[in-house]
Image (tube, rainbow, N blue to C red):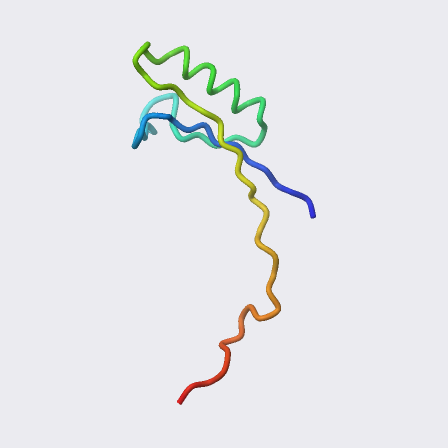
Length: 77
């Protein structure tokens, strides 16, 4: 089965969400190279006291189909 991977750049600082400027975090990328480049740019831009950013790999493949998917099971009265 073909794995469809995506990469997220996330902050090590808890609850940091910044989608208002030119550098949104968390940010989604299709390739690891793009994600690493973006992480490097963010780490260079932030101050010395910011904990930094990391790249997280996520598997986007759908879960395997179950034979019982869509069945309601035995009826109860």
